Image (cartoon, rainbow, N blue to C red; front, side, top):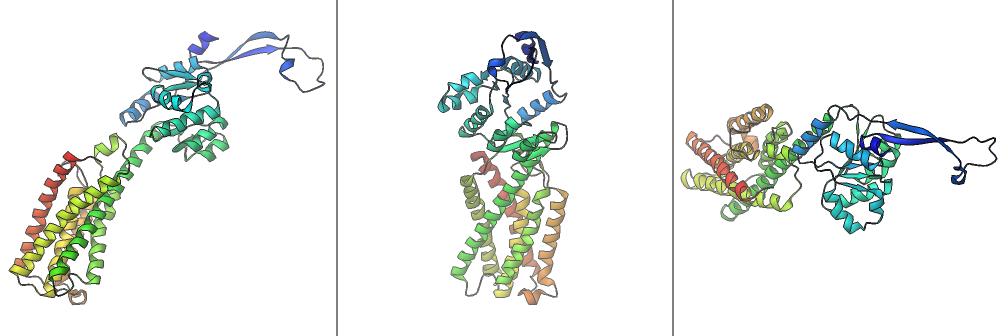
Length: 391
């Protein structure tokens, strides 16, 4: 039996006993004077893609642990068969005598837990979560239901028992383990693009409000009319809405990331302040050089705000230098469209309704120069920022 277990087989012993008639329910005490007749062997062949999937998951920063009720020798065999290195096993009987604090330590070091019951499976999951890990658990049996519920992400399969599928967060409909890898990559892309939107939205809003506050101290009129502010927010949001289609840096794919409010706040202060510096430069040029009145000031700052905002999206969407990670086609096209709309509006038939007037070409040239300098300043600041801080 030990030899067969070490070869990965699940082994059941079979014994018989002749009973003339049932006068009562069978109990443990009836299991006497039985005749052993042999063993039943069951072997679950690992899926052909299991080894490659485990390698792929490891490259994505995911550590695999086997938690099973099977014999420890069978579990070790399967662990070796699928390429797990340095197999360290713990049995359910050992867990019975282990405190929660000891399990927190053992759960980190061991990668095979065998001969465990459902409660012990759940203890292992909770110990890993206590250590700060995000835990995904995959199972298909009744005994897996508590662990599927306790894990951060419960994963089951289409042919699992109903209670396991109900307890799981995801049910895999395709009999292919590469679905796990694909799902993780898509999840990380979504998370990375969500972070991009948060970074850009908070820094842009902080910069605009800070600029508005500074301008209000020196102007005898509103720096921007409410309808103009709403139009700025609408137009600058269009390129940012295409972030969902954007390409993602490898750093966000190759290892997991978490929300970091401190990093987001630091990003907002650095790039929001940088945005305000160029807004103030625009104020100085419009008022000092072109002697702008209220309408020209509104028109000039409107165009500068939108052009600089959509250009900086192309910079801040990636940690890499410009040219190494290209934006999606959709983002690029929408950015060009919004820039064209922003430039056209002061000259359009509805300019008066919006409170704009045509901008002199010299002033427009100055706005373009400010936007281009801001573009490269943001690129330089981004490189220094990510050299010093990492999300």
